[in-house]
Picture 1 (cartoon, helix red, strand yellow):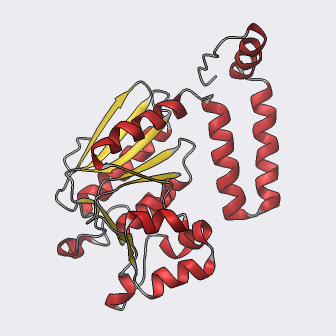
Picture 2: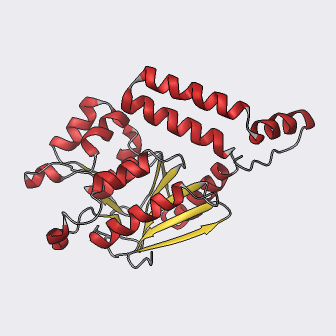
Picture 3: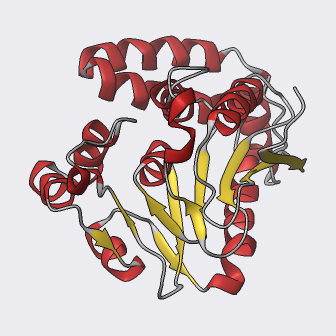
Length: 255
């Protein structure tokens, strides 16, 4: 697929997806189609071990749905399909929140496994839909309480709070606040460190945790055991143990 609304690049097992509709990178049909295609492809790619999602420009990570594109709302993959593909991926996704992350933009960040945000004083994150008499529609109602707990999530959603980076960090909505000039450098370094971890073991942790949270503790344990049996017979397990005994850094291949 030719990408016109996003930019996808891969270097040393780290793939960066840039939402390319500045200044606010609002989500239209094109972004939905291209992002869903990219995430699906990356989930099956051996050349990708970690994924960064960010926005073009300095003003917006993503401002959610493009209201001017509402005529296309029933076409293509819907927001929940895309967010589920991200949150259930066996590759770690990192949101590099370079500006506003509102509505669907906040939901996209919530779908990622890690969230790092710029310290820009005009950057805000939140789910303001109730102000318009509607509700978050791409998983925010379900994911926010899993991150913050029920009462904090209700407070943010029901009062349509838009949070500054420091406030979002204080309650655990994001993982780190980074100076704007260093955001991509630090996020890329974090992704590179993740990419050096054993890919199969990383996939096992992400898959087991996702299934456990979605389908329950016992189902998560069942999947953990399946992965444990699979990993025991993997080349990466042999490499990890061999490297430990030889006192050297392991080189994992994902096999």
